[in-house]
Length: 514
Image 1 (tube, rainbow, N blue to C red):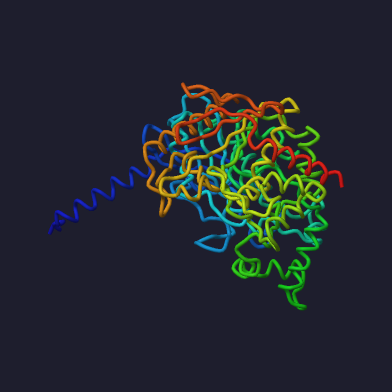
Image 2: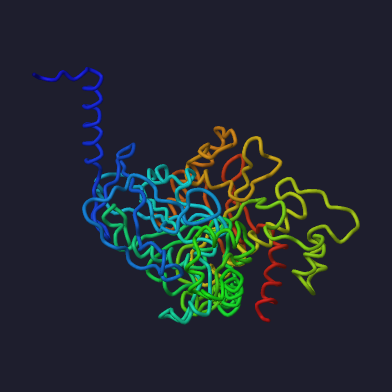
């Protein structure tokens, strides 16, 4: 007797079979490790997510240089993101060294510029899986867009004398940056299969991601892996020496391990949750250079000194900051603003206090764009003037350089100004994707379209201009031209906070000479 299949069941069976065939028919690519299958996206492009670029840094591989990815059998699904790297919230994991790729056309018809994004989050938080970093919109501008993950916090920036001893390079720390370099090496070896040009790679990032891509320009390990750099709110820094980081790591190990299982062995025996809880969700463990150290291998010398000497990689640089990054500095202050400025500027303090309107007894009035004296100082000292100093060095060494300031305050949030990170959804064309997003309007969409075109023009040719946009002049140390993204569109200006940043540079020179 023949069994009758109910109509609804038959429909479901047909739908499931069709869905299965659709999944099986996604674009396939053979990469380091094996084959992957992605998915087609709108306008003829493709996306590949959760691609491993290194072995999971777990167990005995915790706190080691990332190793080449292991091979797998069959076709690996690449239609869903991998887990974020271990941090204090969310479903994070130590098994997190994945990247994601968006292409503007599938199959590829020509080689296109490549943009590789490293997220912010203080080097202790964040993920490439954030909806704000969806690469589909940027890819539509004719680039291959990659977002990469890297170890964070104690997992990515922990140094210890025993780690230094076991390392073939006699170093420890900087694992998160080594992950970024490994991702760039994977891109160099595989991106042509996605239509990308391995000889035309721009790395870009925001906040900690910006700091990271800037210091990578001073690492011999990244040479040949990048052609251009875009940094958003995070200039080059002067990290501490390895010995300081080792002492900090040794103290942490003494605190967390037992006599029966001391030191590095005990640290590797701890669960990821235990380590994360012990080091906290914040900057206290990493310090002001976000965990980066001068280790003698990734960084033979201080990245800031490399830039000051004009010895960084010869690469195009587009670098900028937001008008009012912070209302207060990231790190806690022990006294008043006046005391903090005196501590920072030493013998130059009287001039600095005058520039911030703090010489008299009255509290200075807030600036409509830059905010209070506290907000001005926090942004100048942690972002804006460091950006100017880096661009002066980089352009002075004969490299093409461009500066920007993002000044558009989101609708309904004008009181906060253009705060730290607010430019990110404009860059990716993901306005409204975040929870509790502002109510963006047509002006915001126009600003976003302009930024995406400038950024991708720069990635393609090294010049952000084109496409009928207002002209963006090159930066030089005399005129210091920059482009400001305002409520009325992009406007070319000169000498951003010149007097304040000149004094900052003078003080920086004084400190570097010590």
